[in-house]
Length: 152
Image (cartoon, rainbow, N blue to C red):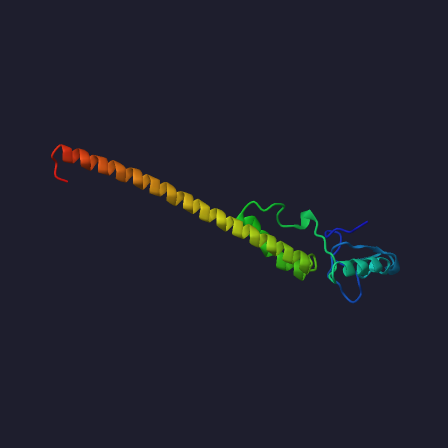
């Protein structure tokens, strides 16, 4: 059984550990909750995973731990961006995962900016069309007035 964040403050390693993810009762510690790094029975698997990942331990964040479930707006992206440094500092998110998230947020921001530029361009084109129609109407009126002999 893995402990949830609500069940514990973190790994019970005597020297101190802030990890709150993947805690399980460790037989070697009399059933005290330990993270995979401080549980001797799981340490070998942790070291192997670290070697496969290029030196950084893999970190998984549960969906319910994220500040948003989807990024549908700039506010959602900002909420995730505010959460990232805290998650890194508390060990809930590894460096690689954080870099990937920052890259995804950057892409979202650029796509949003591009969409804003396109909306502005569409507005300018609509304004130009409206102004062109107004100018054409004005020219028509001036020509009609001149035909009637009105000085314009």
